[in-house]
Image 1 (cartoon, rainbow, N blue to C red):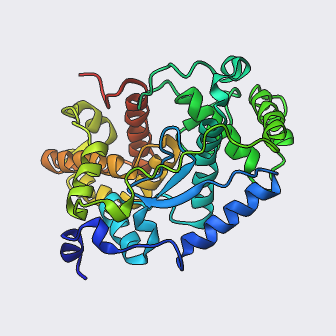
Image 2: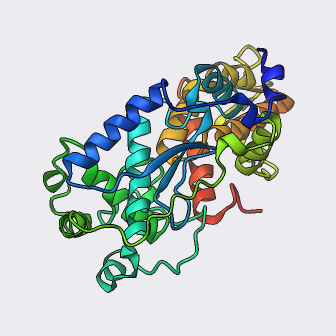
Image 3: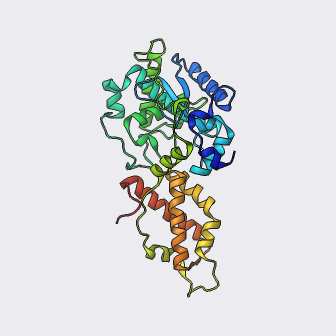
Length: 327
């Protein structure tokens, strides 16, 4: 199928299954990790529209696009990356979601000690939070300092580190305050090992087999979520990074350089800020178009480093305030 033909299909009509795919072997490996840690509860994994653990359930939704290589290719084209596309990344996400499963199944967040260590769950979720890159109060598992976003995510990330095979977490986090959280999880898991779950809901929200929306509408919604209304870029910023054509008439055009370096800059900024590649790419494209309009030229070999630093600054400001730049 062409991309256009595929985008016109409904998700439920794709007739996707986990059995026989690479996801199946990864889930089996994940279950083996749980057994090795003495965890008897085995979450139900199913295909959904994104990675998540439905509230109050013992199920884990895995994005449907991971069930077929053609869909992974489309996902990469539409969103610029395939979340969970490699075995390592997939297992990291499964371990994280397992933290939510344990929280839901045993209601551990209601424990006073849990709340004292991780914080109150009544805190509001927010895409913007003051990330502290060098904080030793939180483990580092998923990109973007995700453990710092909310107490429930902090617990899920801590569980994920604890679950990771062959990871010497006591040594890695020695001297960190996060070690207290890991030791709590270690103690908690030993207590829960022989206990049946208090809640074991098998709810499958957004089950791919029942999703009637077309892929086109699915991606339109996701791209809208990751898209941002960018402010007018200050020409002064760009003129600090590049020079006017009159000052360097034979210099390479900044817009040409940015298009040529797009992938390298995009990967570096996304990895170190934790922002989705789709969002960073839209930001970079806007800068590229403005450079073309101003006819700016390169002024130094370090232009790539400087533009990456500038983009990272804008992305970090967004993570903190919800805006890429003060208006």
